[in-house]
Amino acid sequence: MKIAVLPGDGIGPEIVAQAVKVLKALDLDLELNEAPIGGAGYEAAGDPLPAETLKLAKEADAVLLGAVGDWKYDSLPRDQRPERGLLRIRKELNLFANLRPALLYPELASASTLKPEVVAGLDIMIVRELTGDIYFGQPRGISTLENGEREGINTMRYNESEIRRIAHVAFSIAMKRNKKVCSVDKANVLETTELWRQVMIEVAKEYPEVELSHMYVDNAAMQLIRAPKQFDVMVTGNIFGDILSDEASMLTGSIGMLPSASLDQNNKGMYEPSHGSAPDIAGKDIANPLATILSAAMLLRYTFNDEANASRVENAVKKALEQGYRTADIWTEGTNKVKCSEMGDAVVAAL
Ligand SMILES: NC(=O)C1=CN([C@@H]2O[C@H](COP(=O)(O)OP(=O)(O)OC[C@H]3O[C@@H](n4cnc5c(N)ncnc54)[C@H](O)[C@@H]3O)[C@@H](O)[C@H]2O)C=CC1
Ligand SMILES: CC(C)CC(=O)C(=O)O
Ligand SMILES: [Mg+2]
Image (cartoon, rainbow, N blue to C red; front, top):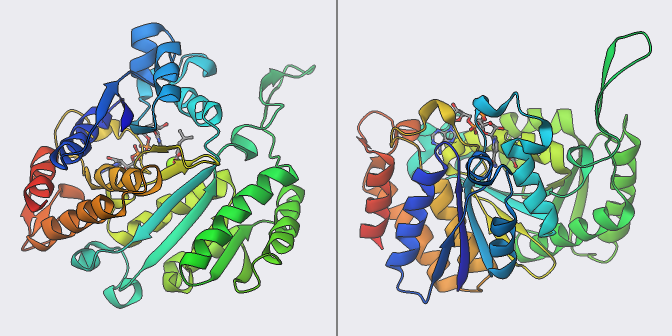
């Protein structure tokens, strides 16, 4: 199993170290190769996605990534900023399908911002399109108009085939779950998402057993807080999925609990927590590594078809939580506050 390990910036190295510790404890035939990305790539090679890093990622079966970004790079030209390195690697590897499961571990019900009865049993799969939409659309930029005023432009665009392929991912996942898909758009205002809705309806005809519903994104944001268990599979575009998945993470207790898999057509994938580099807590060994450890479990499941070891890792996370281990973000009265590295140790011990 050839895995490119890209720790990135901020808490990235701390959380990736825990996931690597867990993978190594599984006694698999692993080849791990580390390389810089984001700010670390810029420091090492003047590029947030150095050519060597991209080559390593392309040659690997899967990529394990921490996070990128730091406020100190905000004054760099856009192309050199850490976030651009992340967008580029997603595009280069054609990772169009981003799966973000929002699953409540019962032990964390009291850490959720919602009442325990509202979130008990929560299990939502957010399917986010990852290589299109306003994050990639051209034209983009900040220019100066004739009157001297500046104008910022981004372009929301999707073509039919991009929508079609993510729809198939969502419906296929729904077939293995509860046969319910909610497509989230803003079709009342945005033509891009009007097309999104039309294509979702067309693809749904190929999955007659799946119930398709549609919701505007503003309502979806509200419904996630009001009654999140109405959702099973949610499918949406890049920017709406980015925002809604951060929102959904708090239903599970913390953004530090939300893993992700970013897949291409053949399930070659990149696996990373849904959160960012958290510069505010970096270097203190206090970040929650569970989203990254759970992303490693997704790596075993989706790229290597190793359901047994994926479940072992998830059960070990569950056991560490049952034993009362909590990083600061999910700590509640009566539980045992531990550091990032200690949480990694607790998961390894549970394995
Ligand atoms: N996939 C990626 O690499 C992403 C990178 N970013 C970048 O990260 C930097 C920080 O962005 P923010 O908006 O602050 O988002 P963020 O997700 O890094 O942090 C938001 C808040 O959540 C907390 N947090 C995040 N992960 C945590 C964890 N594992 N354990 C405990 N607390 C955690 C942080 O301390 C912070 O208070 C920026 O440069 C941004 O562009 C943001 C989102 C995703
Ligand atoms: C830097 C962003 C594009 C990444 C992000 O916020 C995400 O993928 O969740
Ligand atoms: Mg995000």
